[in-house]
Length: 445
Image (cartoon, rainbow, N blue to C red; front, side, top):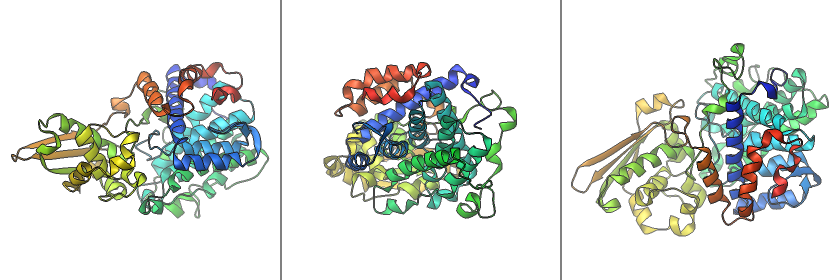
């Protein structure tokens, strides 16, 4: 991939997508700087050695690996970073920090950064789509498959040749990891997953540039990624359509199929949240008119988000019951809806006890190509209101606009030290291709 594409191959639409997702990534990363785990990551970055790369919330530059680690972790905290449905990967939170740090480290121009982002998304999404549904039961795809995207993005920034890129991918895949066990505790580990995948991918690419070799068959080998981490891999999906050329009408870049998140919760809750908001509009008496609520969705959504008694903000973000109740009561699920007083709200907790979850076999068969939910509310008079959502807001079929992402950025930057930099950053992202050296992008912060 590193030798088969160059910035001139990108169409204006490809570049538009890259800018949109870079801006969306910045919004999530800035929001992460004022969180408790975000401050811990920033403090860690402050203690690391100096270098040419910028880290959000840290004065002065840091080494590229540190920048990828901290910036990646920060952007995965508030649960508003992008998501690809078919691969179940959050590509931006891993790929963009690696691409940015690598480009800063070598004074790469803005157009190479744009290419690195697009190609990194491609690699992460292709591996994620190929690894099979069984992988996601134990492993977070963003942490495991995302490492391939980070290595690809950094490799393009560093100008790796085909053999070096193979080594980078081999080593990134060999150290990839990220288990779901943290979800049982509501622990902070998920943020580390993103940061470590970004920094591991960057390190693998940097070492490859020095001649550090890696496995040539890391995906398909007898002791490789698929054999170790999946019982149902589909290896052909890694290369599907590549014979028709990347970025062509016959094989468009995968970045165009990625979803942007308008709600501050696990993406598996979003179809139900949107359905619940529409149900709410049909209830004259609001939540007081509800006798019972039934949420039907696909099995993985329940595996990850069936949490009827969340005890902290993180668990609430992964609670389908909590997020559905918030949407029914208030018509929104924003970052502030996970504050301690909101979580303890008796009206939310009481409504959660009246929400039943179920797997719908038809919706389960459609996953992961389609992430759907059906919300049915039984009124106190026995009548029903039912809404089915196949494409929640933010999916390409129900896409957000550039202006909506700018608005999201303003909302997430409010209350941070970056709130007055939003206009400059928006203009900088719009102008990415003209940057001679990318190192100045985050210096406005």
